[in-house]
Length: 249
Image 1: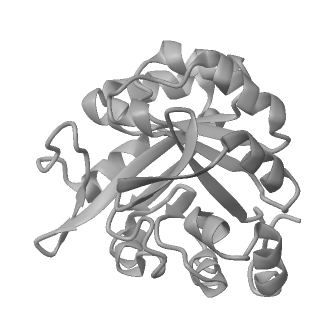
Image 2: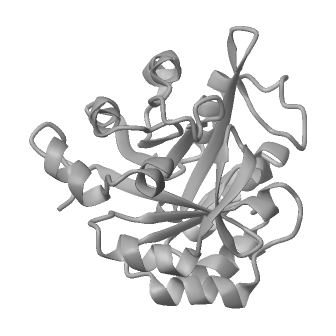
């Protein structure tokens, strides 16, 4: 049986570590390199870096800074934010990232998914899907383009058919709020899921990790605020829920 993962998420803007609420209200909270050094020691299973500037269309992190991040990280490392070409995927994997997370790039050009997976392997490609509830309906969220015409369930079915490695689902409504993951969203999509999924957005207490990871199809729980604003660490999470969830050690 595959082991489930605890995954801290680190958001970067202007080379600084920031935290957001519902994808807005950026707040500088520290130094990315120092945070990586801390998470190296706290039983994190992997780290996810999201480049907010790139995802918002305001440039990208410099390659030399990405190399510095990689040089300090002893954990498997994923990166997302504004990735929209095979050349970018190749460069990021070549400098040492284990996986790339592609979101808007595939929304805007779905044909890229199959080609990218075939070239780099499904284990290297994670599809990110940001989701918001609008007028009582779960929808794909994309500030740069209006994707109301893309049905969430049909998009999930489509990306799974492209043999992607896993899907990262982020609830925009819950992100940064620390009031629990979006369990209604998970219930809504669960029967359509046939690939490993990672859930992100809203974790505020240890019980939230347990509640999401006991779900058979959920292979990872992402979190950010809980690790920066409380004394809870990936290690303490594992100590509490290890008996109920099949975690990596």
